[in-house]
Length: 390
Ligand code: GLV
Image (cartoon, rainbow, N blue to C red; front, side):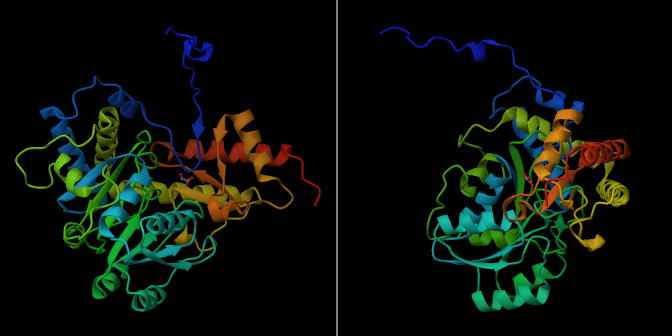
């Protein structure tokens, strides 16, 4: 037979990608240094130089997470890959899992745990709500979970959840503590080892400013003990930590054997972004995000806008949520800024949809001039978007 489907005209046109201000919850703009790292020549995923780069990434994650865990890798995939990896490896079908839901990420983990056959118990608050340590301990005592999930940086609500003390509660009740820092890592303090967090993950595309598609994750000894002494195999072959531990040189075996082909360029970029964070220093990065967020809050309030999280200390410094101003259609405001300012901000996500608009100024984007630009665009949108009939 012969070729009957012609080459499509669209694919013959050169690739066009606009330069855009990515001031939403991610992906964020990628600095030239990280873009350049990602465009270096490809090497084999099993070459010695690649192993060295992966070892460097592991060390970079140690610093970013403040951990010494040997079982520290980057997933070939986005934050969701890390989320599934954590749940698939540490939980067996029929086991109890407790999930704190105060936005979309808890909902996702509950769904993932449901799908693999765990007994999922949900603690639910409306977006913006948070859980006290007493509430968490009571729920753990009641449901006896093997795993408790909490989101540190709830990007859908703009909340940074307090972490202190929860790891100790989990340990006391023989439950693993899993924390999502996709939206908070590098922007708000987290100390994996001293806060007794058993499994921690993040994404590449937020405050780390690498392209989407890789996701650091780390497991401590308690988590390793549980996941490497299971009766059943994890439901996912790609995310099986027995294989990934070998691929990342964490299993003490003399040779790494082929499991899957990792995103080589994505790992180059991730390494560069971890290098930038290490150069800047965590304290400096946390301080910068906090100060810029405070500057943004003042500007938003000057525009007559209301912050969605009333308590300043609970606000996520990387992603700020504002209540949708009365009489406006949030979709119109966002579309106006995209069209006239080439700028992305977003609406809510999952349960916060229709409740908030979100501004993310993360890592490379965490600069006063960007906050000024975002405020200017919002002011313009508020002036020009007709109030809908109430
Ligand atoms: C994450 O991707 C978000 O929109 O918060």
